[in-house]
Each structure stands twice: as C-alpha cells, then as structure tokens.
Length: 284
Image (cartoon, rainbow, N blue to C red; front, side, top):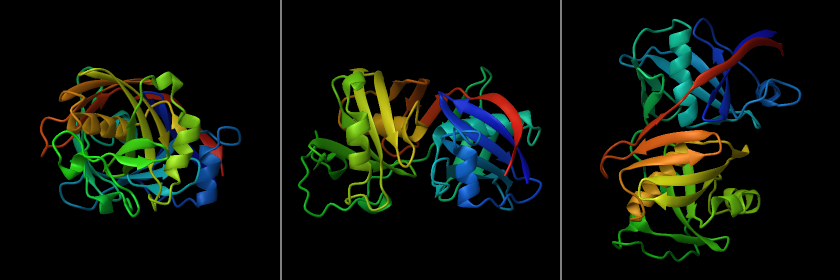
C-alpha cells in the first residue's frame, strides 16, 4: 500500500501524521516500526493518527504510536500541538480551539494568533496506581510540607519524584543537565521493576524559579530533543517540591516550552511551537 503522510515537529520532537478521517488506517506494529525507522522508513519519535469522533463535544480522536516499538501510547503533548496545526492546515476544522480524545483522556488544544499552540494537559495525578508505581521495598523521603505527593523515592542511587501526566514520569533534579548520565540512568530507571509499564525519565536543572533546563529519556525511544508531558511533569514536580513558581520556561535541546500550573487543583497548560517539515508517500 502507498501511504501518504506529513512529517511535523514540535520543539524538535518529530512526528509522522496520518489522516484517517476518510477511512480507517489499520497498520500492524511492524508497519508502524517501518514508518518510524530513521534508516528504512520516514523516521519519527511518534506516529499520530487523526480520526473522526462520533462523541458529542469531541472534534477528533487522537491516536499515538511509538515510532520504535509500534505500540499505542497514552499521551504526547508535543504531538498534540502538531495535531491541531495539522487539522487546520488540512481544512479539517476552522475552530481555533478543538477537543480531542486520546486513548485515556480528553485534551483541549488552542491555536494562538502567534502560531504557537496551547494544550490543556489536564490535571497531574499522584496516586501510584495511575503510573503504575510499585513502592514495595522502598522508603521515601518526605518533601517540604510532609504530604505524600512530595515524596522522593530512592531508586538507582538517586531520588525520584513520580507522577502521571496521562503517562508515567519519574523526575530527578541534577546540578548540570549537560553532565547528567541520561544514557545510563534513563534506561535503568525506565525498566526498573518498580514501574511495571516502564516510565519516562526527566533530568531537570533549575536555573531560577521561572526557568529550567530539561532532558528526557522516553520509554522505548531513548532521549528525545523534547518531551511535552516530560516538561509538564518536571514543572509540576518542581512546584510541589518548592523549587519553582507557577509559570516556567522549560529549555530543551529542541526548543523552549512554557508550562503553567495555575493552582494545585488545576490543569497544566503547555504552550510551544509546531510546524510541518515535509509531506510524502511511502510504500508499505
């Protein structure tokens, strides 16, 4: 089959976007892996499928597949920004704000006048079952105010804050993100048995109360140039641990994301760029 696609990127996190609004695109894991392969396919961190929604109040379905494994995953914030730019460019909607259904969530995406996109990433979750995270045999250190959400968990010789942004994240603070052992600690923590479904690992270096540098090792993909949910997780962890204020610029290798968490009971808002790189077709 010949499959048309659009290659997009958001802060260096790159995606293959497929239009499934006119009919289902049922690809096998092997075909998805071929698409995501940077030598034998198109190459991307994630593959995004745009589908029509039959649910009232929901504009589209938003499906996300890992470019390395072909597995469907829960969430991708940088991909969500590309999603709304794509549906506008294709004429699939003229709404500036759209609501999309992922495998486990509903997201609101807003196309701003300056071309950037703001994504309502919903509320972070701290219950261990949401990740999931098995605490057996681990003794946490309490954070600033003694609440369970502020616990830091000892694992792999470091202390981790754990939370879900619709997908699982472990966040550790480092003094110098350039010197952080991302290639070693990232896979080690990702595959630790305390995370039964594995975990994304963020290495965050606070620069001030309103700015951080961040590198993220993503499940199955390894280190990427940016990770939207990882940026949200890092900022939420930093706020709850008393390191950061409520609006933070997150500097990644791929670009800068603005993350805002207005209050503890509110949604996390992520604003950043998204753009088309090229379009094409591939034989699968």
